Length: 167
Length: 175
Image (cartoon, rainbow over all chains, first blue to last red; front, top):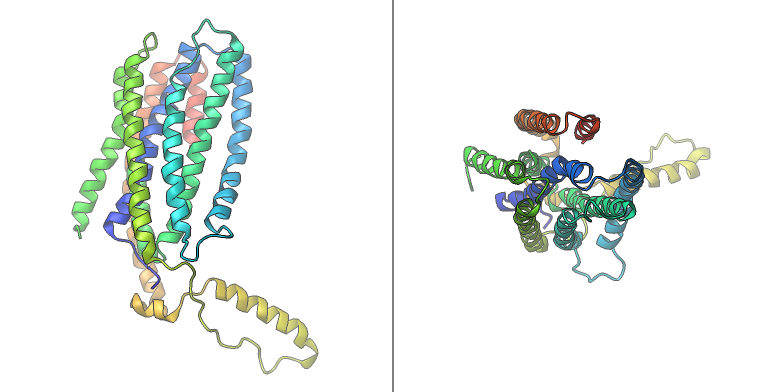
């Protein structure tokens, strides 16, 4: 039978991803600039280079990961009972762990006395890795909504939990 | 099943917990020694990973109740008896295309019956859902505004001596 709505537990679980996302993201957006400009003192040249790399990666990764996850979710050769929800849930699990690791790596920068290139590379790589994992998890999380319930009220309930969690 | 009030209460508790990470970051931030801040980040990271695993576990468990593919409803013929005979090949192509696009978005009659939904009463149902949704959005917007003002004030206080604050403000607004 097609499932039209979600239980409260499923709606809470759906929103829980955004709770994790909010916890990490609040810290990241508030302190990454302080860290790289104030503590590590990345040179202005490397700062702009890293930001441009990050900007390009940020523009690309949403649809790249969206395409990749859709391909995997509706993959050829999948088991007959395979449901896209299983793939999305697996991505949220594995991607979430990688996202946590990427988040932790940010806070282990080279010393302020290290060469500029190391500081700049760490800045660029940690930004890209963090944002890549963020997109990987959140793209799949967004796609999940259409796949776990088909009713408007069910989706409104899920969105309510998401909005409350991310605040 | 929780009552609506209880649901809001639990959601509010989790929302407060999610925002508290910034507060603890602020308390333990020390530019000259990052060790205590790293500990906070580690705890926050563990908490986040636990919530991702929770989502994954519950949603995976719920997945067997979902069908791999939607059932397609049988549609009435779309071709009109008044169609000129000369235009039939094109009309047939267009009809097939419309039929295909309608079939993609169709839900089985059995599914409608299971949900006790009358397709004719969709407007009433959607209006009440929209009202419910917008009242929730209004509530959340208030929380957003307060938390964002707090974040911006924090940014200005921390780095008011450089252009960084404007950059951070712009990135927060775009977020």
